[in-house]
Length: 347
Image (cartoon, rainbow, N blue to C red; front, side, top):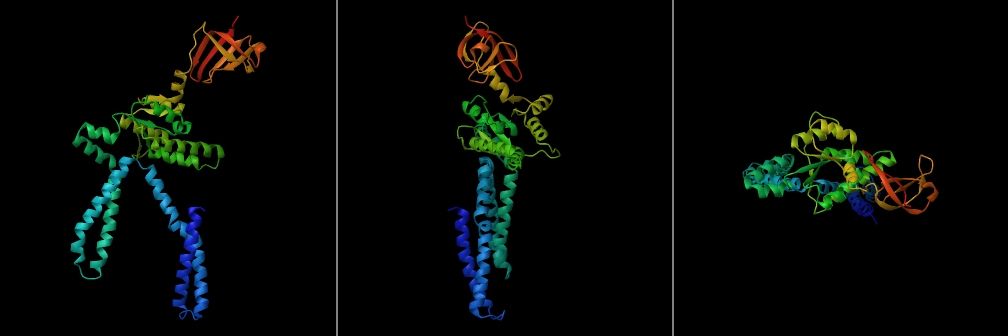
């Protein structure tokens, strides 16, 4: 049984009993027998319980849980600190307010507690970065390292989260910094995940799953940045402006974003370029085994692929279709899209 179903059943029971009780109390006012009034109001309570209970119980709790999971640890800590400060100030005001004449003496203390708690939580959450920077500056480099997760912050864009390889790259430790995802990038990822197009929706959900993996990996320095860039609408432009402001590099697979960022003087770390750089390299004269799986463009050519997806064009390989043969590399070509080898069958 799902949580929604259990909450609806419990809500139905509670609201039915409450409705029946109200029906008995109001029977005289509506000029109906107590039994009839109790049944009518009980049925209304059943309907209300079935419809509203999940919206009053389970779904708000899910929303709060979702917000807590997405909130970076530093923002969560500062928000809790703000709540404590706000409630502390309300506590100092509670005694003098309680001395006021009724009904203010009993009404104002709880109201002030709610208002100050909310203000403390909101203010500390909105200015968490400045507060942590101030604490870091006061406590020295050790505190600064703890709160910021390192001296170098690396911004991730939507495309690299959807691609997903960033999780494996981050585990290797080669990036050497704290990976950060701005909140507006997460919002764009949610929009993609909610798209009516099935392919876009799957890509968006895959990106959200990879975002969750980064958050769950205790060995990967990661945080979510709440800072926005006012006056800029496009997410890519916001990301570049934020990178300029923070003097941080951007990890992306988006070629247009790559070009725009470079023109702004922002360092770009392209995952595709990294993948091309670590692909297998064979020099002319090297021998390798390759399985010919398709014909090439030219007459008598065969084509095979290395384990990392690199294409190998074999002159005279058409006669060896669907066979694994040893070939000798004659040359290779590097392109932006990848590397390609040319070879001939070993004699």
